Length: 637
Image 1 (tube, helix red, strand yellow):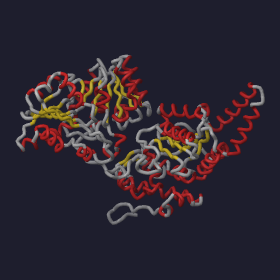
Image 2 (cartoon, one colour):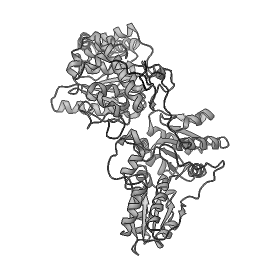
Image 3 (cartoon, one colour):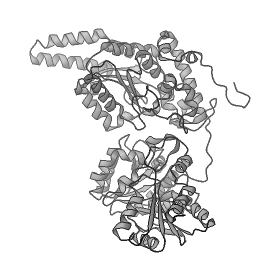
Image 4 (cartoon, helix red, strand yellow):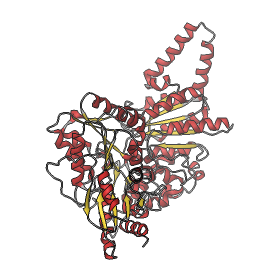
């Protein structure tokens, strides 16, 4: 059915429409829950079709979300979603359905869980694999405060591939605090298909009678000699292993239940009720098998299960394609590296669960044996690349700027201190738009420029990026980082055979006399636009492209400082980055002694929430009007 404007009419959601509180949800008879789940799924599809966002992961947890809120007393019971983009059905059920049309938009809902947004979001999660650590902290705090509530962590969509999750599980298994972990296994990587026998065994193993019997048998076994007690314990473990496959989690100290069909509410609800009623002091892991993209045919058919989508037509699943001036920076990087690898067998590439997002899926298609996706494991990715470099290869590690933060110790200890030539490709550096504060690549300049041996570059356009990839390939004397933003550049043609740049050399792109604007990266276009505005006002501005945040071009700095009254640096990064490096160099080389006026423009000391990238740049004062304003202020005009 379509409306007059040609779009598909929203599906009716009568059960969901009748629920305005958790009390009303929990008052529903269990036989109504599948209909509620169908309504939630329809509401989610309708909302995301108009806004874009994460779709597949949320579709996979609709029934699980309904069951958790039905069984547990949220928000008093703490429910933590990991990874955060699974939370759309959770938001719909917790009073935010009417705001879903503004998700991931300015002044709208976050695309992730967010503490300040709702009491139903006890812990924010934009990055993955944090839930068990946070949940254990909450459980221990509950015990110390002598409170009585459940803490439930839902971890899935690849988040179990991170070492932090296993560190937390290991700690939780020995902490003797009640904690419930729901393992959302949505790619069948852990469990075989589940069915009626598995559901029966899961209900049995989660029941109070089983816990009571198990405890009693342990007490009886303890009366026998230690050899018999150990044999009895092993026999019980092996019996459970044969029917559940939970050996790993049992060895870590968890009571393992599952696998459970995550789309059968008649399986989920009884198990969760048993888990809640058991009140065991031992942590519990419930293994739930779900299907990413469940219930929406286009998502089920897609290779990525519609993980992240633009606006789309509900009936056909066809996504709207944004108009582009040319290739994205990501595509330029991938093409440059793929072509270079055709003649350089030493080039290899690694990423942490983001082959498509970083462009390395294209590299993998051409060079499958030289591309490594290590899972959500940034620490491992960095040190893995260090090992490759130590053996003479030329590794490129492509990780979003905000995710490389998770591997900072490895960048320091395993790469920089050993001066190994690992090439870091920092995609999504700077503002990222709708993903919001958790994904802003604001800090990489600050945390990389302080490291010895590190070379840090930022291209102003597509051609410069290709040259910087060639530079990184040729630079075997230490680690290199290239940062670039999300999306497309200004449309500069990419050379067929890009030549390496001289390390630490910038360029002047516009000559002036009154003030100098020293830009790093893609702020160059707005710097040139600001110079045009200033020229109309009678202010002559030189515009330079630093190219390198480290090492700085000291000859260029001396030139700019020596013949201008003011110098303004511009970067799409936090304080402590490029501007700080320039100020340090100016001060230590005596270039401020003659009265040069300096202003450093960077992302203000604040968290920027979801908006368009253009809106975020404007709010930060890093657009052309903001740059022109800073020049006027420096000159006292």
